[in-house]
Image (cartoon, rainbow, N blue to C red; front, top):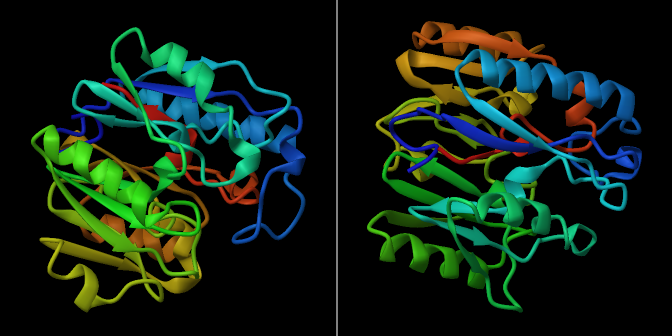
Length: 265
Protein backbone atom coordinates (compact mmCIF):
# COMPACT_ATOMS: atom_id res chain seq x y z
CA UNK A 1 0.00 0.00 0.00
CA UNK A 2 1.57 3.32 -1.01
CA UNK A 3 2.59 5.42 1.96
CA UNK A 4 2.30 2.44 4.27
CA UNK A 5 4.72 0.36 6.29
CA UNK A 6 7.33 -0.11 3.57
CA UNK A 7 7.76 3.67 3.16
CA UNK A 8 9.00 3.04 -0.40
CA UNK A 9 7.21 6.05 -1.89
CA UNK A 10 8.41 5.17 -5.37
CA UNK A 11 6.07 7.61 -7.15
CA UNK A 12 3.96 10.67 -6.42
CA UNK A 13 1.72 13.12 -8.25
CA UNK A 14 1.97 16.81 -7.43
CA UNK A 15 0.67 19.98 -9.06
CA UNK A 16 2.24 23.34 -9.77
CA UNK A 17 1.33 26.46 -7.78
CA UNK A 18 -1.78 28.23 -9.08
CA UNK A 19 -1.49 31.77 -10.52
CA UNK A 20 -4.28 32.63 -8.05
CA UNK A 21 -2.45 31.13 -5.05
CA UNK A 22 -2.70 34.41 -3.14
CA UNK A 23 -6.46 33.72 -2.86
CA UNK A 24 -6.02 30.26 -1.27
CA UNK A 25 -8.27 29.34 1.66
CA UNK A 26 -6.55 30.18 4.95
CA UNK A 27 -7.42 30.39 8.63
CA UNK A 28 -5.04 28.29 10.72
CA UNK A 29 -1.34 28.95 10.07
CA UNK A 30 -1.30 31.95 7.78
CA UNK A 31 -0.01 35.23 9.16
CA UNK A 32 0.17 37.06 5.84
CA UNK A 33 -1.19 36.82 2.31
CA UNK A 34 0.18 33.74 0.51
CA UNK A 35 2.82 34.61 -2.10
CA UNK A 36 2.78 32.70 -5.37
CA UNK A 37 6.42 33.49 -6.14
CA UNK A 38 7.64 32.30 -2.74
CA UNK A 39 5.43 29.22 -2.90
CA UNK A 40 6.88 28.27 -6.27
CA UNK A 41 10.34 28.26 -4.69
CA UNK A 42 9.21 26.09 -1.79
CA UNK A 43 7.37 23.75 -4.15
CA UNK A 44 10.48 23.28 -6.30
CA UNK A 45 12.57 22.52 -3.20
CA UNK A 46 9.90 20.07 -2.03
CA UNK A 47 9.83 18.19 -5.33
CA UNK A 48 13.65 18.10 -5.35
CA UNK A 49 13.64 16.60 -1.84
CA UNK A 50 11.22 13.85 -2.87
CA UNK A 51 13.30 13.03 -5.94
CA UNK A 52 16.49 12.98 -3.86
CA UNK A 53 14.84 10.25 -1.76
CA UNK A 54 14.06 8.18 -4.86
CA UNK A 55 10.46 9.25 -5.56
CA UNK A 56 9.50 9.70 -9.21
CA UNK A 57 7.38 12.87 -9.13
CA UNK A 58 4.87 13.84 -11.80
CA UNK A 59 3.98 17.55 -11.58
CA UNK A 60 0.63 18.37 -13.17
CA UNK A 61 -0.05 21.85 -14.59
CA UNK A 62 -1.54 24.47 -12.28
CA UNK A 63 -5.23 25.37 -12.36
CA UNK A 64 -5.73 29.13 -12.48
CA UNK A 65 -9.32 28.84 -11.26
CA UNK A 66 -8.31 26.82 -8.17
CA UNK A 67 -5.97 28.70 -5.77
CA UNK A 68 -5.49 25.59 -3.60
CA UNK A 69 -4.81 23.16 -6.43
CA UNK A 70 -1.22 22.43 -5.35
CA UNK A 71 -2.60 20.55 -2.33
CA UNK A 72 -3.16 17.32 -4.24
CA UNK A 73 -3.23 15.12 -1.12
CA UNK A 74 -6.86 16.11 -0.65
CA UNK A 75 -8.00 14.93 -4.09
CA UNK A 76 -7.51 11.16 -3.82
CA UNK A 77 -6.88 8.34 -1.35
CA UNK A 78 -5.12 5.21 -2.57
CA UNK A 79 -6.64 1.99 -1.20
CA UNK A 80 -5.06 -1.13 -2.64
CA UNK A 81 -5.66 -1.11 -6.38
CA UNK A 82 -8.23 1.69 -6.21
CA UNK A 83 -8.09 5.46 -6.01
CA UNK A 84 -10.96 6.78 -3.92
CA UNK A 85 -11.97 10.20 -5.26
CA UNK A 86 -13.73 12.28 -2.60
CA UNK A 87 -16.09 15.20 -2.73
CA UNK A 88 -13.88 18.02 -1.52
CA UNK A 89 -14.51 19.44 1.94
CA UNK A 90 -14.48 23.08 0.81
CA UNK A 91 -16.82 23.96 -2.08
CA UNK A 92 -14.25 26.18 -3.80
CA UNK A 93 -12.04 23.15 -4.34
CA UNK A 94 -14.53 20.99 -6.20
CA UNK A 95 -13.09 20.20 -9.64
CA UNK A 96 -9.47 19.90 -8.56
CA UNK A 97 -9.82 16.12 -8.65
CA UNK A 98 -10.30 15.71 -12.40
CA UNK A 99 -6.71 16.06 -13.65
CA UNK A 100 -5.56 13.83 -10.80
CA UNK A 101 -8.18 11.24 -11.79
CA UNK A 102 -6.93 11.31 -15.37
CA UNK A 103 -3.39 10.64 -14.15
CA UNK A 104 -4.31 7.91 -11.67
CA UNK A 105 -6.66 6.09 -14.07
CA UNK A 106 -3.65 4.64 -15.88
CA UNK A 107 -2.81 2.46 -12.88
CA UNK A 108 -5.79 2.45 -10.53
CA UNK A 109 -9.48 1.65 -10.51
CA UNK A 110 -11.27 4.95 -9.97
CA UNK A 111 -13.97 4.89 -7.28
CA UNK A 112 -15.89 8.11 -6.68
CA UNK A 113 -17.45 8.94 -3.35
CA UNK A 114 -21.26 9.17 -3.44
CA UNK A 115 -22.78 12.64 -3.56
CA UNK A 116 -23.66 14.17 -0.22
CA UNK A 117 -20.55 12.82 1.51
CA UNK A 118 -17.36 14.83 1.86
CA UNK A 119 -13.74 14.06 2.64
CA UNK A 120 -10.29 15.56 2.18
CA UNK A 121 -7.31 13.27 1.76
CA UNK A 122 -5.57 15.43 4.34
CA UNK A 123 -7.71 13.71 6.96
CA UNK A 124 -6.14 10.32 6.22
CA UNK A 125 -2.94 9.06 7.85
CA UNK A 126 -1.53 5.73 6.63
CA UNK A 127 -0.31 4.05 9.82
CA UNK A 128 1.23 0.76 8.66
CA UNK A 129 -1.74 -1.55 7.87
CA UNK A 130 -4.29 0.88 9.35
CA UNK A 131 -5.92 3.97 7.88
CA UNK A 132 -6.49 6.62 10.53
CA UNK A 133 -9.37 8.72 9.20
CA UNK A 134 -10.16 12.08 10.72
CA UNK A 135 -13.66 13.49 11.07
CA UNK A 136 -13.23 17.25 10.73
CA UNK A 137 -14.76 20.40 9.28
CA UNK A 138 -13.60 19.11 5.88
CA UNK A 139 -14.49 15.43 6.31
CA UNK A 140 -17.98 14.36 7.37
CA UNK A 141 -18.55 11.29 9.51
CA UNK A 142 -20.42 9.73 6.58
CA UNK A 143 -17.48 10.40 4.26
CA UNK A 144 -15.06 8.91 6.76
CA UNK A 145 -17.27 5.83 7.20
CA UNK A 146 -17.50 5.36 3.43
CA UNK A 147 -13.71 5.38 3.13
CA UNK A 148 -13.38 3.08 6.14
CA UNK A 149 -15.69 0.54 4.48
CA UNK A 150 -13.58 0.56 1.30
CA UNK A 151 -10.42 0.20 3.37
CA UNK A 152 -11.77 -2.83 5.23
CA UNK A 153 -13.02 -4.43 2.01
CA UNK A 154 -9.41 -4.22 0.76
CA UNK A 155 -8.09 -6.09 3.79
CA UNK A 156 -6.74 -3.17 5.82
CA UNK A 157 -7.84 -1.76 9.15
CA UNK A 158 -9.54 1.60 9.62
CA UNK A 159 -10.04 3.78 12.67
CA UNK A 160 -12.00 7.04 12.81
CA UNK A 161 -10.50 9.87 14.87
CA UNK A 162 -12.31 13.11 15.79
CA UNK A 163 -10.17 16.05 14.63
CA UNK A 164 -10.27 18.95 17.11
CA UNK A 165 -11.41 22.37 15.93
CA UNK A 166 -7.93 23.67 16.72
CA UNK A 167 -6.65 22.28 13.43
CA UNK A 168 -7.65 21.84 9.79
CA UNK A 169 -6.84 18.22 8.95
CA UNK A 170 -5.60 15.12 10.74
CA UNK A 171 -2.30 15.26 8.82
CA UNK A 172 -1.83 18.85 9.97
CA UNK A 173 -1.07 17.62 13.50
CA UNK A 174 -0.03 13.99 12.97
CA UNK A 175 2.20 11.87 10.77
CA UNK A 176 3.86 8.46 10.83
CA UNK A 177 7.46 8.56 9.58
CA UNK A 178 8.30 4.90 10.29
CA UNK A 179 6.45 1.71 11.26
CA UNK A 180 4.97 1.89 14.74
CA UNK A 181 5.74 5.59 15.21
CA UNK A 182 3.36 8.53 15.32
CA UNK A 183 4.52 12.14 15.51
CA UNK A 184 1.83 14.39 17.01
CA UNK A 185 1.49 17.98 18.17
CA UNK A 186 0.76 18.76 21.79
CA UNK A 187 -2.47 20.57 22.52
CA UNK A 188 -4.54 18.81 19.84
CA UNK A 189 -4.50 15.20 21.04
CA UNK A 190 -3.68 13.54 24.35
CA UNK A 191 -1.62 10.57 25.46
CA UNK A 192 -4.87 8.80 26.33
CA UNK A 193 -6.12 9.20 22.74
CA UNK A 194 -2.99 8.21 20.85
CA UNK A 195 -1.08 6.07 23.32
CA UNK A 196 -3.20 2.96 22.62
CA UNK A 197 -2.73 3.48 18.86
CA UNK A 198 1.02 4.08 18.59
CA UNK A 199 3.88 1.79 19.57
CA UNK A 200 6.07 4.90 19.77
CA UNK A 201 4.57 8.36 20.24
CA UNK A 202 6.78 11.41 19.60
CA UNK A 203 5.35 14.75 20.73
CA UNK A 204 6.28 18.10 19.23
CA UNK A 205 5.43 21.25 21.21
CA UNK A 206 2.21 23.11 20.47
CA UNK A 207 4.23 26.13 19.34
CA UNK A 208 5.70 23.91 16.62
CA UNK A 209 2.43 22.22 15.67
CA UNK A 210 3.11 22.73 11.96
CA UNK A 211 6.20 20.51 12.14
CA UNK A 212 4.21 17.43 13.21
CA UNK A 213 3.57 16.83 9.50
CA UNK A 214 6.51 14.78 8.22
CA UNK A 215 7.28 12.44 5.32
CA UNK A 216 9.06 9.23 6.26
CA UNK A 217 11.15 6.96 4.05
CA UNK A 218 12.86 3.64 4.65
CA UNK A 219 15.93 3.45 6.90
CA UNK A 220 14.63 6.18 9.23
CA UNK A 221 15.02 8.95 6.68
CA UNK A 222 12.52 11.78 7.06
CA UNK A 223 11.65 15.11 5.47
CA UNK A 224 10.56 17.84 7.88
CA UNK A 225 9.79 21.54 7.63
CA UNK A 226 12.70 23.82 8.47
CA UNK A 227 12.54 26.44 11.19
CA UNK A 228 11.32 24.21 14.03
CA UNK A 229 14.34 23.49 16.23
CA UNK A 230 12.61 21.51 19.00
CA UNK A 231 10.97 19.19 16.51
CA UNK A 232 14.30 18.71 14.78
CA UNK A 233 15.87 17.64 18.09
CA UNK A 234 12.96 15.30 18.82
CA UNK A 235 13.44 13.59 15.46
CA UNK A 236 17.24 13.41 15.78
CA UNK A 237 16.95 11.95 19.28
CA UNK A 238 14.59 9.31 17.87
CA UNK A 239 17.26 8.24 15.39
CA UNK A 240 16.05 9.88 12.20
CA UNK A 241 18.22 11.21 9.38
CA UNK A 242 16.69 14.57 8.46
CA UNK A 243 16.17 16.57 5.29
CA UNK A 244 14.60 19.99 5.90
CA UNK A 245 12.56 22.04 3.43
CA UNK A 246 11.52 25.67 3.88
CA UNK A 247 7.73 25.48 3.81
CA UNK A 248 6.85 28.93 5.17
CA UNK A 249 5.16 30.11 1.97
CA UNK A 250 3.12 26.89 1.83
CA UNK A 251 2.21 27.28 5.50
CA UNK A 252 0.69 30.70 4.75
CA UNK A 253 -2.03 28.87 2.78
CA UNK A 254 -2.48 26.25 5.53
CA UNK A 255 -0.61 23.61 3.51
CA UNK A 256 1.98 21.15 4.85
CA UNK A 257 4.54 18.75 3.41
CA UNK A 258 2.17 15.85 2.77
CA UNK A 259 -0.47 18.19 1.31
CA UNK A 260 1.58 18.69 -1.84
CA UNK A 261 1.43 15.14 -3.20
CA UNK A 262 -0.42 11.87 -3.51
CA UNK A 263 2.00 8.95 -3.20
CA UNK A 264 1.14 6.36 -5.81
CA UNK A 265 3.73 3.62 -5.49
